[in-house]
Length: 85
Image (cartoon, rainbow, N blue to C red; front, side, top):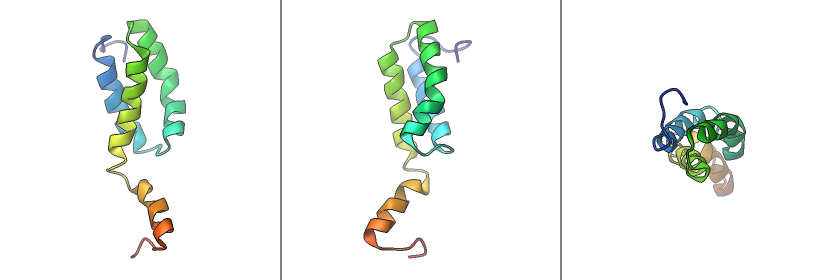
């Protein structure tokens, strides 16, 4: 990231990468555990706002929850339905 991102574009790239990572790591906390060791040093190296980078990761996680089905599992359990229903 540091090789092509700037301080202003790092939040955008954090958002995009979080969306991709979320497809494989559906937990927000688990995703932060995977991405923080990369994103925080990149933000510090580029002089980017760490809060914006962190929020971009959170938003990237949130919007891809609409694309992957793991969010539906607890809803089905609460409704008393099975996946085939």
